[in-house]
Image (cartoon, rainbow, N blue to C red; front, side, top):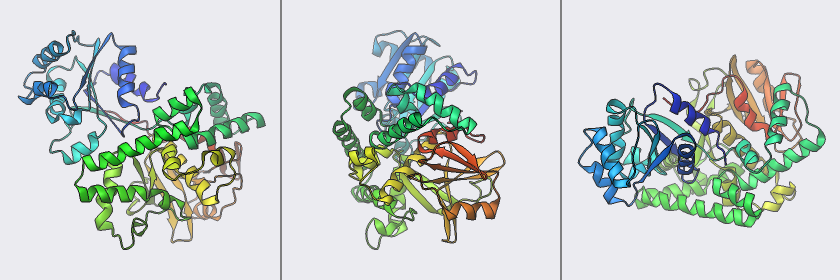
Length: 443
């Protein structure tokens, strides 16, 4: 399954300023698989080293790495294969299990830049925050990998030609033929169930069984819960699980701003702020901050007011015990439930495009789901789970800030009328094509 981040990996490989690469991301988003596939395709060989529960490998680093060239000789002897500059991709997997290996990236950067080194770890962000060792700032490049976007999923399921039609419709504001629009909406609803975790997508592609997909998703959710216990004290782990378990309820509200009293009665921010930070650092939750309708959005954001989404809408559907057939048929669900899934999905697509998440609220009178930064200022993005697109909030924002144009993501086809760009739900991934999007950065 091709991943969009592979284009960034190719740019990294060809860059004259290339440094050792660290790939961040939640457990099971496909980091290790993507690196090994990339290495097999674009290099002559891959030297793969897995650090977790591997004291023999870790011992090569325990004495400290003073000379990267000597370390390469040791790694070559350990693996039984030659490691050649430029033609071998060295992969350090689960590198958070060996702080000395992470520190060795500085030596590779300074003394042996001719070697191509890429690292990954399922809890790397947490290890850096709590493990007593630090990221080699200035001596390594970084990328962030997320679950498969709708675009990636549609391609993996054999519908790449439909993506071209969607892209053309987005760029020209021209409606798709009704048959294609209907097919794309069906694909969108299926994505709400399957989501973007590679194992779930692979299971659906091979078996087409949504119950098997849900079993995969529940296994991933269980792994996340286990991680909460592995990388926290028992008290912290309980709080983190409680905060995570509250997310479906948080998103079920009409006002989706995160409320601590929905974790438990009387809960306070002081008790659970660390738990939310854990979820964000682990890559399994997305924070959306309140901002004003002025650029730069980060400058005008409010760190005390935010919404929290799950990093994958399929995991939200599984965790919230949604009925897959109801989602696929778009029948039998309450409006709040449909809205929560649609909004989480759009948040996931905006984040996959490299943008930070923001929303806007006006003294409790009006709220716009998302605000993105364009070339000429803030652009409001409103999300509707169906074709009914009437909303007072978007008008309030436009009257207040006079944006260049507005975006409405809904069940309606493409179009542009009265300063509002109509974007079908299945085309939310196209928001990354707008000017002002930030490609996932490295370097």
